[in-house]
Image 1 (cartoon, rainbow over the protein chains, first blue to last red):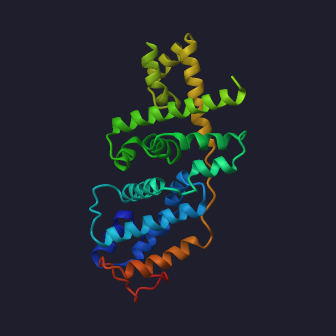
Image 2 (image 1 turned 180 degrees about the vertical axis):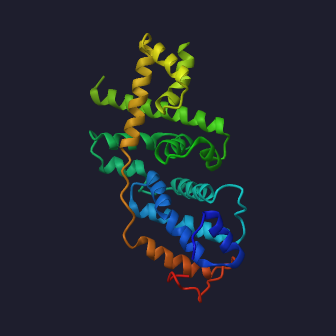
Length: 179
Length: 94
């Protein structure tokens, strides 16, 4: 089967019910969904559960005809992934949040751990802006479709997020140095 | 150029997303303004640290295949109308 674009694969599934199109979409996007989930969850198994839930929702929605091509399939799938991540973060008493896990395992002097801890302390919307724009490489326009705000609002959010991250890192360094 | 304007441009400056004219104006300003220079260097450090800190290990080796099987089974059996085309098994799962 010729693979074609995401949108062609979606169309193929929706028009003739070709399940191989879903398999192709899954293989094409599984790693990026997993990577995004790992930005939120330190434990691999938690991220894998996010991936599972994301693709179940995605494929059911495709079966229900809920994807209408108003945005790129990739954008739509990322939005589902973010929603699943945020819902899972809001569930009580999950011991595997990035912040919690790192607090228990990361050596305090390691810079990557410091940054990830700081990232975990950002407000949800700022963290999402940093993940999408700085780590996943989305342009502001596509990030705005995922977040559901205007391009201007996303740029502003991204601006504030970087400053908040910087301030947290600076504050923690001062505390470490006893200043 | 005022400090407030420079600060609003620092994100684009770090992303190298400024016109030459604006970039030169920011350069000129921070060369003479310690406050904005510190703002720029600390912000640049935070962004660099963020980007360098994000190594992600891969998913479990069999995770994708297991999930694909579950998706084929459960989605095909769901009441949403997705049918499992059993006759189309060239890729083995659907």
